[in-house]
Length: 455
Image 1 (cartoon, rainbow, N blue to C red):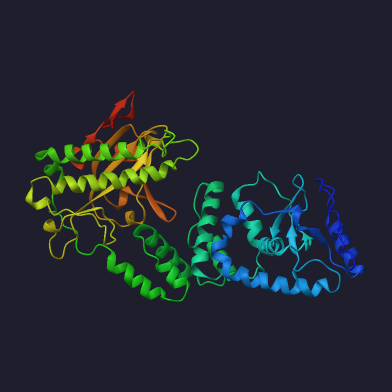
Image 2 (cartoon, rainbow, N blue to C red; image 1 turned 90 degrees about the horizontal axis):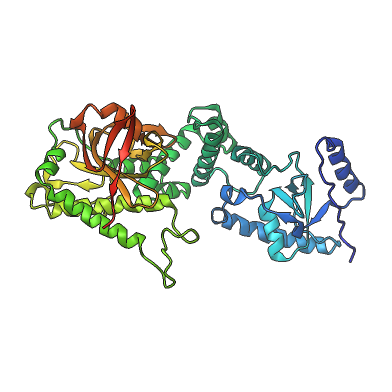
């Protein structure tokens, strides 16, 4: 069997590489009618590719590719060539230590490695790999070089996931998210042959799925549900009715019945203490451990859920008849956390409370809570806002009346800055009630005073 042709790739030096070098390499291989090959052991995946093209989203297509490469490898072996790809992969022209980084052809390379094929056909990229480049640069390079990949980029779920990655990368560079009517958005859709209006609808469905635990976009993407049907199902679960100017006064309820807050705080503290102080057989504090601990934002989410259950339980045990049937939306997805069936009036929006939690930043102006998609267009009602320190031992809690104007758009979600909220409402005491801790102005600057949150 003839030996496969291998060719050492020249190290790239700034100013030394030009298109002539590339053309000469390709031309040389063409002249002897043999491909330009490299050992698969000298290749590494681009570190951002797994995020952009996760295996679980491409497995079925990958298996078809793997079968095709195996068939081609068998055919090539009869001619003395130990490679299996018809289309050359693309690698960055500058070496990274002992390896070259793949720009396009990650799954072709994976198939070669799994099948034990020693070499793979390659071409140079016109780009050099820069580990210090920002995420947007990596995204653009990977997407443009992989445009010919055997993937269905028009699948709705796949496209929305990539748009999120693109949007976040864009935000990191420019400090704003790309608008859904921008040229960037239209170009993104056109490259995937997706109608702009359809993509906007899919983004809204994805937000709804995330907020409500549904999987409508997956069903749309697989052809099991139409966009219209998904939109109708979303409408069915949105709060319906007219805003009631004479809605229930929860501030008065809590002032008249201090046992409600006392009960809720006691239950929430004990629950969080149990979670945060749970230790394994080696005495390691699992959730807060440096090596095996959970991300802080996940614990923040747990705090929100814990307090939500505690306050609902407190209402149910309050002895106040109109509040005793308070429930969480455990079995029905809605935009609110505590529901009061006995307080609801026919034709009006349901009586409800929401719970939002966040970690304290460097200052009150550097602290924000996320409102999710529910912040868009929401009517005035009450929210419990919880702000915790970095180890969850100190807490600030306020009950506040908020509406859509308080929630600012943040890409596909909403957020509220605590400093902005205080500046707006500090002279409107009827709009808030401190539950734990308070805010005071010191040297003309607002500061949060925390209280102990340990059982």
